[in-house]
Length: 102
Image (cartoon, rainbow, N blue to C red):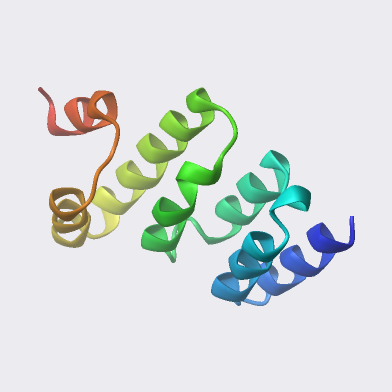
């Protein structure tokens, strides 16, 4: 409970790097719900940070959904940066195909 409170306070203050670093320091307390809540807080403004943290999510369906949602939002806001990130990083094949229309 303490980790969640501190992490969310950091996140709501825009200190997402620190919030995620704290969850990495105490992974046993970094629940799926906490990680998704932090991702929801910073999704639009820090897509690269969210994408970096997605593999930590416990459930595959949640990871796939988060990749889709984050990349779709980013493609809508800054398609050049999002496409560059997609070229340089691994994402699930299924998500890549959906987003690239293949």
